[in-house]
Image (cartoon, rainbow, N blue to C red; front, side, top):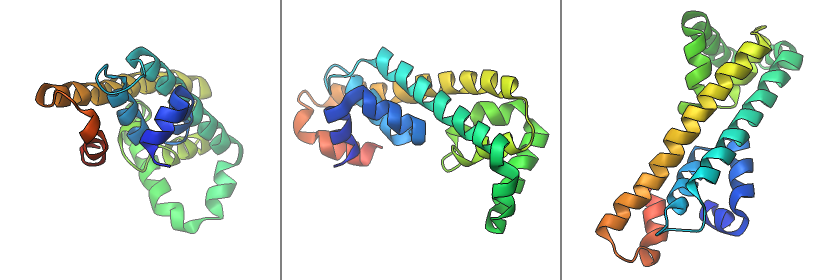
Length: 170
């Protein structure tokens, strides 16, 4: 079953779980399917559930990093370079790393884990993470919606082409 089929079958549940785990692709598709010409989702619910999924997933990973992060990383020397890059970025840019990590593919799950292992304040992480999750869910969800809008300007009946548009547009 592909992501579009998951969204059509399970809608907001699939969106929440997808954004809890990683989320870029599923959020773009949900935004696309929220456009009135494309599907049955509503953009406000897409953005809200993406925000909640992203916030809760990253907060959980942060706390796992606080709980077992150092020991876990010590047993995985192959992760040292990535963890050191996150640490350097955190030392240099602090707040901006927490606000923006979810915009960089491949960093979404690893970065909050490493941040948690550094002793970063949980309250500060929660506030910055919530702000970053809000920005991310609005920008990426709206981007998918606008993609649906743009396609609608060129094609009056999108349904026969939707699978191809989703395959090449995302």
